[in-house]
Amino acid sequence: MTVWFITGASRGLGLELVRAALAHGDDVVAAVRDPRAFPDTLPDTGGNLLVLPLDVTDEAQARTAVAGAVERFGRIDVLVNNAGYGVVGAIEETSGDEVRALFETNVFGLLNVTRAVLPVLRARRAGHVINIGSVGGFAQGAGSGIYGASKFALEGITEALNAEVAALGIKVTVVEPGQLRTDFFDPSSLRPAAHAIDDYAQTAGARRADFARTNHRQIGDPVKAAQAVVALAHTAEPPLRLPLGSDSVARIEAKLAHVAGELGAWRHVALSTDHETAEARA
Image 1 (tube, rainbow, N blue to C red):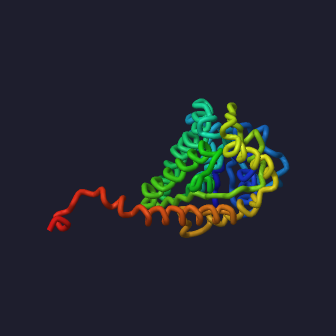
Image 2: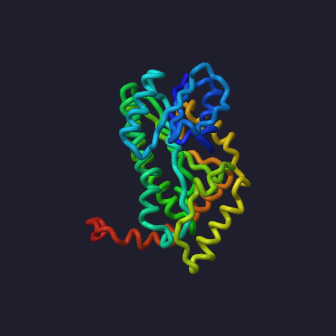
Image 3: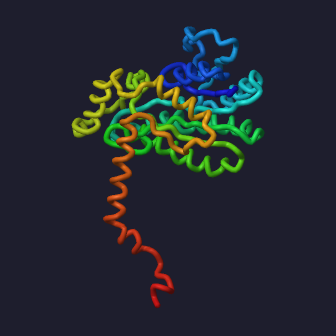
């Protein structure tokens, strides 16, 4: 039986992950900002669900929640860093306060929880850290650059953490979903920048309108996504990256092709800046 610790578990993909893990017969710690908001419609699973309060921006509370999980279940096998939200707006439209608040949750909050859980995983020389990123952390466009920047940071954290803990028996994966049919595009989760500039109406403004038009019509199925993540956690050799959704795959393939094309076109310039070697001077 696997013990899960899932942040941002009260709705959306986080809640579907709780359901999928419980259906698999696993133990689940659902870490949520307000336990009163956690739905009471989940089936009775014989006591293998523990709901704990956790504001991921509070490092002390993260340590307390992890201690509560270990006290109840004896260990943590899988950490899912799912808590987060989005901001939509052009770079210039998004204030410093809005950027800092987003990074406090999406980046620094993830680090708070990860630092709290890693000693538990290291002690057993086992475990899996699954960071819920986004295809927006791999490829970006107008209107969601700040949110994307937080997810790009998550990609770098995941790569480095994997290099640091692989020899300790701990696996690390970043999941890169496309658009899932959740309430993420609601203003409560995808917050518009407070300031709008007319010059960006055709770029960032159009992206805001597209999000509103797509809301609750997204192509991705969060139930299937959650089931894929549960299967991932029970895989002996999980990947470093796992895209989810045809839209995610298409955007990743398009960016890889674009990067390869630019590298080929500018390769001679890139290689021209090395110090000249003795062999080249001969």
